[in-house]
Image (cartoon, rainbow, N blue to C red; front, side):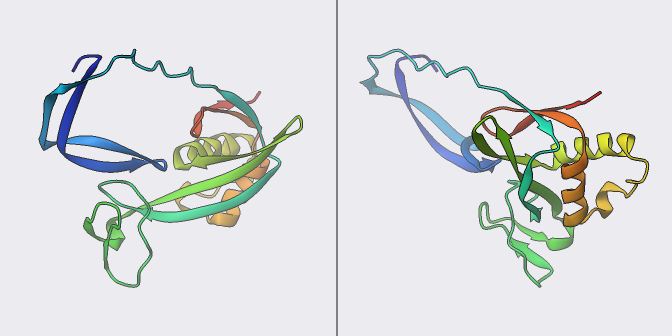
Length: 176
């Protein structure tokens, strides 16, 4: 592919990660140059991603949500009483018991006069859990045994710094 050219792409998969949809090539995908189309402007240069360091504990939690995710596209699957469930995003049929349990939380933080709602997901929550177990000898439940109330307590009491980019948490730094 080259700048200034247009292409026709067919037989692609639409996937989703952290709420953002994107295209992915498959073994059946084809890419052909569209010869009759030309672009007469320069490619857009993406803005440098802004980072925001947030001190934990946050000022509040909007919600904590546990959910099952699809083994193929990792999107949230709807709860059902059935043993076999079908992903509404990619159509994968799977055993409910084989789906991964994921956690996300929406935190509220106040910086100056701005009130921000930011999302954190399992990987960040797990890192915060590891820091919390080092900081608090009384907080010794296994991560897999934590319920939404335990996650809420964890987030509202852990002392750490979380670095966010424009989408979500990027890095967790233990406070000293």
